[in-house]
Length: 523
Ligand code: AHR
Image (cartoon, rainbow, N blue to C red):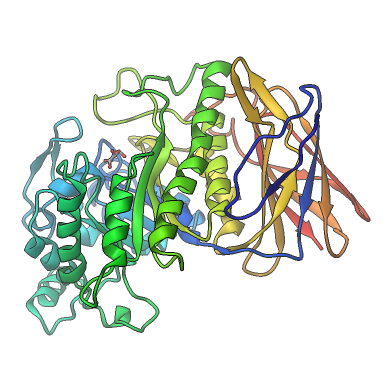
């Protein structure tokens, strides 16, 4: 039996019921219809002072033999520039709620202990000004998380003033004395991090009271971000973890009852692909059972977005407040022999599929989900980039980000498809996932994920409107579900060219097993 699924923005990703033997998939693209804009900020990154995410991964210091500019490694900057990273969330994570920004500015830096992450010594040689230098190098915007857990409101307000005030005030003069005359811009201000957990284990009511004060007093003084500029800083409140709705309810209720004195523009959601806690599944050397379990767990993101969006709709039917999934990704066992608490894991083809499925889910919820940050950028959890001393390798997850570049600020285009099923034991998943969109230049694109690790799919594209003249793009696959790139073999999992055939209305493309493809449909 076959069941066609209509997958439009905000509708459920369901799997179709079809014969296990079917390998043909029909994807219908409603090319003359359009949905919401897919914010480029769903491709945000996350850089926490954690393990070698900053030290070694981004910062090597100006005296290092590793090529660098002002201490920031050149190879990593060059790789990140290619991803057009829209924003970087910094300095944490759990680290943010114990971070005291003054330790990391000026000529005298104070070292501290990173209690959250392995008790490593935090030299604070990379701080606010180095972060903005790095952002300038990669061409990205700032997502700063202030310390709500262990800091004062005064400390957070002073930090935002240090970053944004001009030199008429002492805050701006202090920044200028540290070599940065012009105020920085802050695209997003995170009002704490996981304050239901590592950020102070607060009752929602307690957090809401604190959040309101931060929303009021953490003022951005940068004239380029003044009210009415269209470039205002967006304040992101701490929201839920997984399916716990208490923070969603409390924050959104408070927002709906707000007066003139405060507001927020976003609510954060944290959700990792982690089937069991503590994370124990290996990141390499796993079989199909782990593969299927991880993909199944990933697809739960759709349920969570639906659940929290429904609560937000109750308080905010106009969708003024964005849902920002500012921590997501696959969280696996730490690499054997790596320092405990550094969260170092390998990154396989399977994880590339995890990233693509998440992007497709975010795109389907583009009306509400207007930001997301993968955890994390370099050397931590589902990283884009791994480094070891002078060596650097790009992961399969990096390449998925690169393939999805046309989705940045694209317009959602509805599709429907007969996905078939991929079944392993008691896990049943859709055989294929598909999302269509028009890029900012109006070109039509289709992203396809073949979840089935054993069967290629013959995909027939039914596209409304003018005939498709050609179908071509990039595909990412590899011999095994746990194939990885290594320093010695960096090209095991890299995108390859793919093209289909287009004869009038007969458009077809062959999708390899366990693959992600992003295709341009020339009209
Ligand atoms: O990304 C690692 C950690 O996961 C972050 O510090 C924290 O916010 C989350 O629990």
